[in-house]
Length: 106
Image 1 (cartoon, rainbow, N blue to C red):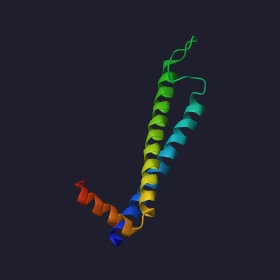
Image 2: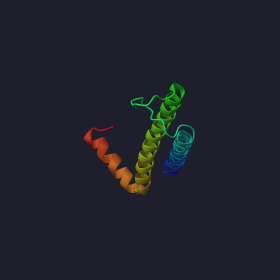
Image 3: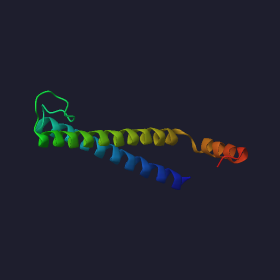
Image 4: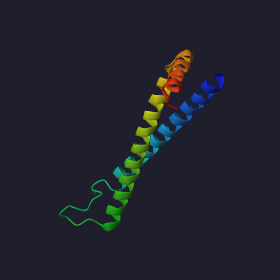
């Protein structure tokens, strides 16, 4: 059981690191988008002509921000699952694992 607790603690630290790193990338991409191309929409549907390079930069930065947000969401979900797992007492884990073995679940 001690090895399981150590593995869970390591996984929590790594998930927290991924979450914080993805939040940093999200913030950096958002700030860069606002600083470099504040009035440009990532999709070129406006009536006024927009420079192509600005549309491409806005699209790239917006895509990076969305991908980082997606990763942050999954990391937060992983943190919630691992945190809930850490709250379950070891004897309850053994009992749950025993039920799985008897029911045919692996």
